[in-house]
Image (tube, rainbow, N blue to C red):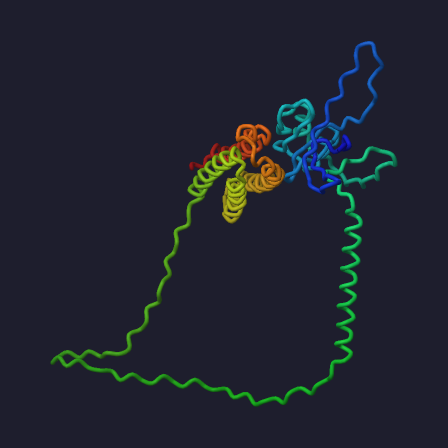
Length: 339
């Protein structure tokens, strides 16, 4: 099948079997030979950014700078354009270093202007024929169900008979009886008088579980994440999704535990670490779902050939998040917390 150039590198649906697959990236346009006609003018939309666990783009460099100034992107946001070997933080790219040193603009935000007719449109990541017909049919069924429910409710209210309220019964309040006095007993030993009565009950204290210190909690987090990434990488080489799902759960669980603590002078660093843990969980979840679809297509092939086709040794998307989280943990350690 043929797909649009806008769908290159994205997930599309097959019009025949309706299954989703990853379209190959489009080939780069060769440069114009010397002495030939100048190349056609095209919009400079070549930049992609990784935000909220998904790839957003393409954008122009000016659009990326504007999103940095508005706070949507920061120096740790990953970016990529054609010609780069791998994703890199925007703060390390010379094209955008000036955007992070300049202060944000002061003033009222201007209203978004509608796109002119005929201008370039953003490509959609999915192409699903028949989606409009399906949504229309669902809308009709929902509207019909609501109308039927309203009609039944009206009929019930119209036919309901008014019944007289039941007669009130007198309320009898029973006063608690006073406790019976316990007769004291005296000791039979001559010269010693001991009065024995009911022994008072001592309040039972529940055992209090000692709470881990902040430094101990951070040490457990580092050890747990190191083991989680190690197991996830080993599982990726064998096309096993379970260890990666466990790593995603650990990232979310540690983010919740850190958010419930008071970190005092480390508050700023911990807020950034909590945000990175949630971003890592979302990003790993999205990438895993895309790859898990292809992992089930290589059954029956030779293991070595299957590993090459499915790129089971390409787990840099795991190590990249591992490095980002390790950098945030190192910032806390450099500020003075020992763990």
